[in-house]
Length: 228
Image 1: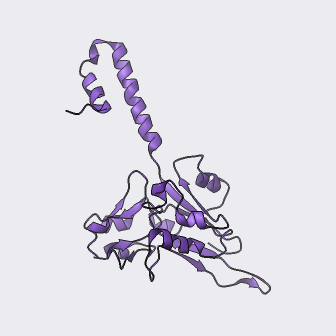
Image 2: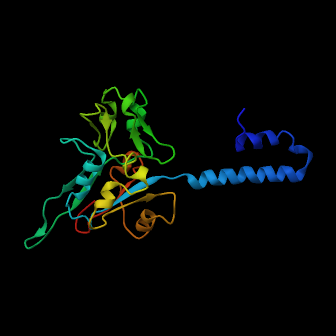
Image 3: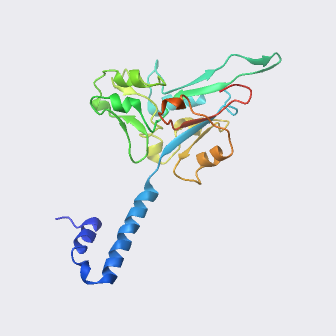
């Protein structure tokens, strides 16, 4: 029988009723373990500042290289608006389209094999390639239309915040690392001191199709001359 800390405490609990001191010690230990678990819980999110974005697409190039995304498909897109203003005072609004990593993900709910899933430790929405049967339900269910079939893995694919690449190595997602204007901010939404929470506390923000109840974790700072 394994003797983990959890098993040890559970076993001790069977005999601690003979002493109040021991009871208090065990309860304190259990509370400590619970607190440790709470501290470790993270909920990753990203913020795109449309005022800082210059549409250089360094993010899309970095994503493709780091995550080995085949040509013809993309995990993220940067879209340029029509000209705003009159010549010579003309500006453009650049918006990001990628997986929103929804708290309430429709793609996960419709998947018949469990290939689409929400990682409970990070909140990241991801895909088990080996479980995907190519039914396309998740592509149809996604309100943001950001999923695609990867021609190499032959499974549904999308942004996963570089979960298997940069993030696994303790680095920021490739798009964030490569942005020359710091238009992208990534971090733990459960940490009040994280960069993303600091940015959101001083900025006006919005989320795409928030009225659908998907609770997306991709936040955006609206372009100051555009309309949300």
